[in-house]
Image (cartoon, rainbow, N blue to C red; front, side, top):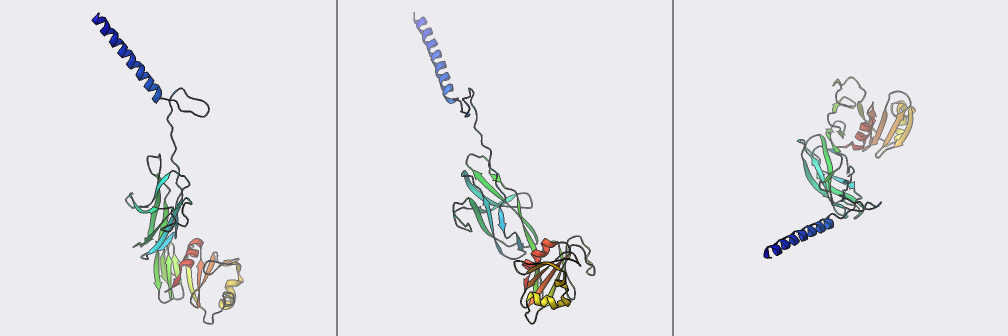
Length: 284
């Protein structure tokens, strides 16, 4: 009789354990609704990591050995973002966090809460070349930080020209040559023969204006009025004028009024570089 009761007790214990285990499994494997009905099998919910746009960095050209404050901004609309860093990419492939990007209306950030994350830092680069930056953002529920594409800041060279009374800022690996009446910028890969002009050269002249004539009056007389005679379009730039010609030499001419002189910058095939040089040129 005792043996029979013992066998019955063990059987009931095993059956009860099996029932409890099945009930627990049914609770933990509850199906996930898909919106079109209920699946009979459990499903894992996954979320694709959001993309991070490339940051905007201003200015994107700085001068060698010149401390310059730059501002980096990136728009991240996702509410799940938990932290944003600005990275500087090193030559060995590693990266360094150089600033935390914030959306709190401080440290260069214009408006708190507008989803524009901002960092402000000072760069002082010892040699011409480039610096590369990238944004790293963390999101709630995403295991790894998300990286943006890389943005490049160029570091341009600086040359003080005492004979001409100007400082010229120009791209890395370009060369600057001085002749009697002009300066010549040559793009990389061209011959160093200063007596020959090549496509891509940028010629810089300093035209004295002792009587303080206006731009139009001065160049109506200078060199017989040649510059304006063949002008197709004259339009203002940030610090002067841009002239596009109908005939004669190809390219544009940029005129920058500077301390009683006109700095005349003639482009021979590199208009964007010539315009940037004209924007950065200054007196000694």
